[in-house]
Length: 234
Image (tube, rainbow, N blue to C red):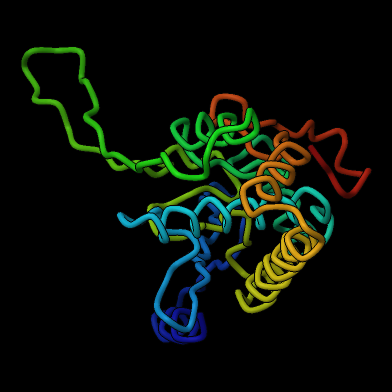
């Protein structure tokens, strides 16, 4: 950011590091690509191909969902300041309400776990985008979210915190993400240490916080007239 501003000044210009358009020039947000791993190299946000990786993935997602739901105000506050609040609350993607988008396939698996199914069974499979014409070949697409409407979506092997403002230092939002993830892990651990099985503990947390995991088509939009209310929750 400093280099951008310095180089622009050398050319008699000014680099606009802001979230909202100014004088007809587009503003921008920032994406924080974030993941959590073990000391043995396992990634909580990568579905993987082994049973251990798959179980770790659905466990990691529920830890994030639990604390994002219970403490969405803290996450929202990490990106709340004048320029960014105007962006998030002005019908732009992502919306101001904090929520997860984990892909339709994972949502179905989450619902199956809540209904009593096993933690295993989810595979992040890539598909083909049908162009609806014979003149163009189907395009390969990943399992991750690509519509830009979710504040915290699944992106293949990480979560992407998309609500961060362009003029903001990324360290505070990521510190908050790490903190809520640790808090979710502590809650899950307390259930297991209290005698509940791993599967049942994960299912309980998914059931209690299912409403924070939304499909892209249902991503809420914030009414700009409600900006004065401050924090928005699902």
